[in-house]
Image 1 (cartoon, rainbow, N blue to C red):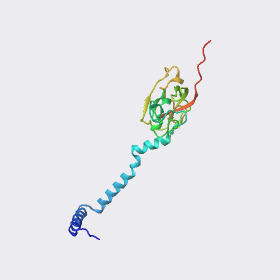
Image 2 (tube, rainbow, N blue to C red):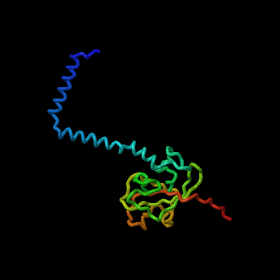
Image 3 (cartoon, rainbow, N blue to C red):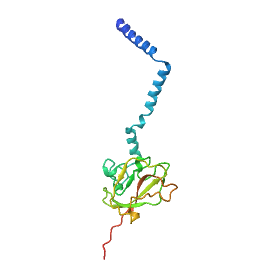
Image 4 (cartoon, one colour):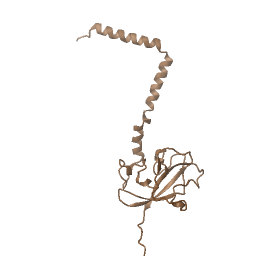
Length: 192
């Protein structure tokens, strides 16, 4: 069995000894513990990186039957081009702790809504979409979308998206908006 050259081992030991003695003279135990705590806290923050949130978003928004693929603009519930968002005006609840159909924790869904009719690109049919405001916390401030397809002037309030729809809730503070599919839109009957 061959043994490593003693001179190389001695040099390595000497370099390592000088380095560790230098660190010991320059660093106190408190400094070492503070650096160790910083490294541990930084490691604990790794799941908060955007990569981890993107993976969690796929779990929160599974692709349902009849929905466009998530990798398309019409199938991404966190984007303004999502097919249900054709008449939305507000912050998307999916970016605020909820989903495209549920309010974030600490908010309540308004019982009064505005309605829109959006075409699902996957099946080519029109659906009635109910846009409910989630109320109770200060506005979210993320993922603002203002699409006004089919919006009417204020004299037709049930079709206007420019009203704070938080009436009927415990507070009138707006947080974000969800888009719920009410059902398939009936085809327009020809006039006689």
